[in-house]
Length: 500
Ligand SMILES: Cc1ncc(COP(=O)(O)O)c(C=O)c1O
Image 1: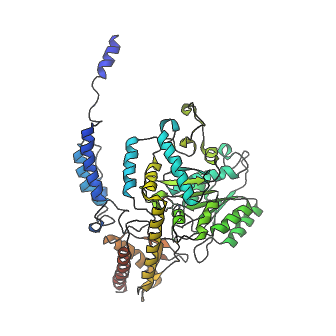
Image 2: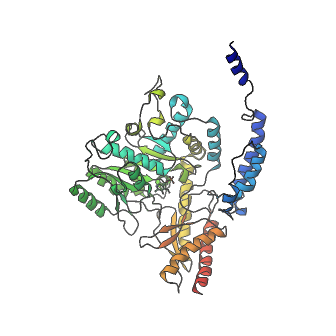
Image 3: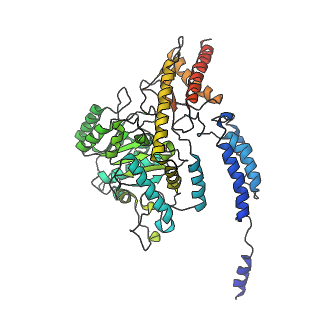
């Protein structure tokens, strides 16, 4: 052996210690972790949905980079003392803000297992079980939504990313030039302006997709809605005709199955016909509402999403999966690869083409095993279990709606289709600006007192509503009663102060 080789060999004799654990260390640390997780996931009535002093987090989590390692025990104590009290709990029975699913225990543990397996779920060769599980879970979800079994899909970080990916697929399917190579301005730079039609209640991610894909936000035409917050078909037809006569290129209609504001469902059967007649792609953004197709009390209109060209749904909303888990399904197989595959030489494997390489279906190379926790949950609850719980959430919302209707000082503010209820505190003696401030103040005060976590919706006339969205398997009738009582009481307390 040469001197250099000997010296090099000696230099790697002693590896830095502390990175790995033996089985006992795993068990000890794991037991402590599970105790902490169980405590943070139960006994909800003794805890608030949101932290008492959220700003403490900024003080607690600042400071220099640690120079030396800290013992795991000490880190766990820090989590108990500092992280748990400054966290917000969307699994709390009265977390009704935005659209967030409470994470089912089985999905939380599923994420732990997936993390330990650390499957880099882009390439079949390095993740056979993960890839097969993702394919199977996508086909279960397709079946739940009435999509054909030949449909293909991909798990992404959430509804936003799934919609952005959908817009890339739509662009490549509908423009008559190679948009991947030449962009949306075309080979000569003089291609027509692309147009996508969505209701004015759309989620902002569709405009973001148009920005990211270089179509420009102007590509998204916002079609006004009717009094039920549903896209107006007469204006849709008119806008398409206007755009065509101007020389623009309409490519898609985006229908929303459960708007983020009021939970409205666009007239999907009519959008299916309109898209067919106009030769447009029909994409359904069902990030929130798509899984309501499972519920007995689902409208027939919603079920028509099975006729769309593509649909987005969010298991981390109504399948109660831990974040993150969004899904894009595309009816015609091969479309995702047509938009995303690069066939990089360093990733070529002997069985290329024979299996699914998810990195060819989307914009991520290294990707987590998102499907695993959803695969576990679907088995744990079954299609019927989910149908019953989603149905129950919708019935709770109907109960909340009636409670609001029956409570003096409160007024319903928008029609309800799914599990979102919007209401306002309406009291005499306050002008419009004061009433506007009151709605926001009530939401904030309910949060401050640790009663519930609500959020707001903007109504068609520009006013603000107090809004609750129930995508939570822990929420009960008593929780509905508490928030109605709290909004009426706090509303009149705050109104009395503002009249003074
Ligand atoms: C209709 C709709 N689309 C897209 C999204 C974005 O989903 P995510 O937050 O999972 O990215 C939401 C979020 O609430 C939504 O309601």
